[in-house]
Image (cartoon, rainbow, N blue to C red; front, side, top):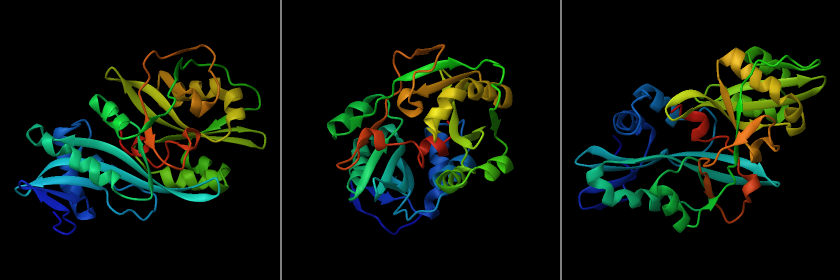
Length: 294
């Protein structure tokens, strides 16, 4: 466990940035205390994302008597938005042992104390939502449609590719760059809709609802007009190729209200804090949603 970068000590509990050397112990801590469905090896793989960026840390941790007692993961990225480079810090898995909960806010202050970032929290739950609101986070519109994935006949002229070699062959430009950045992350699935010379790159993740791992959540759509036309074929492909029974589609991501769907009464909240970006400029790429297969 690294000793460099200790920020301060408070009653025997040190606050430290998570360095690469700490990834193994942090992964073990998260497996044992947050989600044991994810193996330590899978946690470790998720903590260090496959895209290349200058990351100041992998989040922050609390250490007491040489043992990790709290962790707040972070995923960093840079995006060109409205012609300028924006630095994003995605605040991810947050876990503090019960007897050290009085120190939990130190992790939050360390994270938000990093200047120049837009902060996203894409899986806040429980009291975290109210805490984020007090810290001036805004809610994203996460209105979500639930669609049954049915084996629809394919429309003439539309094909869907999901094999890696096929995706590499058809994508180009920024779509290909995004795909290559995310091709190896554990929680992202990929497919491309092809119609003539039109392409739509779709990224999704397998998701759980009420403990059931039968859902896909749409994370990214590159061509909304084509997706609207081919949506049924996409849902059918998720069923027949990936064995996924239903799709969750946020209307702000797919930009239409899917037919034969119904809106969830209580969609999961997602939040962000920025003095520069608007809600429509926030996406789910380069985040825990693509890295952590909970």
